[in-house]
Image (cartoon, rainbow, N blue to C red; front, side, top):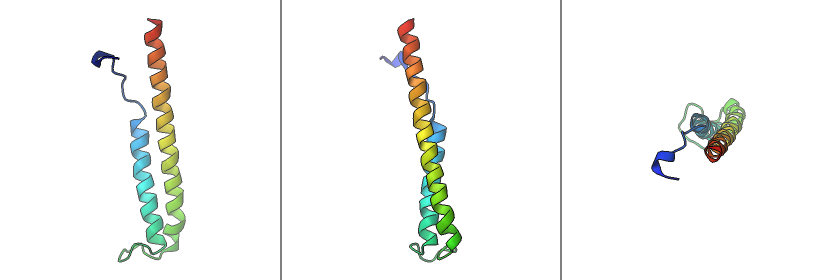
Length: 83
């Protein structure tokens, strides 16, 4: 593969959004469990419940992004082989 054969980036927005959701979910979980001190979210049970849900949603987005990227990469490589 040469520089002229670059495959367009696909799936990156899903993965970036997933990473953001994962980090926010972990932070919310830590705050809800009072692991993060001096936060207005500290020791609030709602954040201990919502945080893991957001983190799992983030992991799901990351997986979807990786799968979309791989699917597009396989299709692009198959199209080039057929040419």
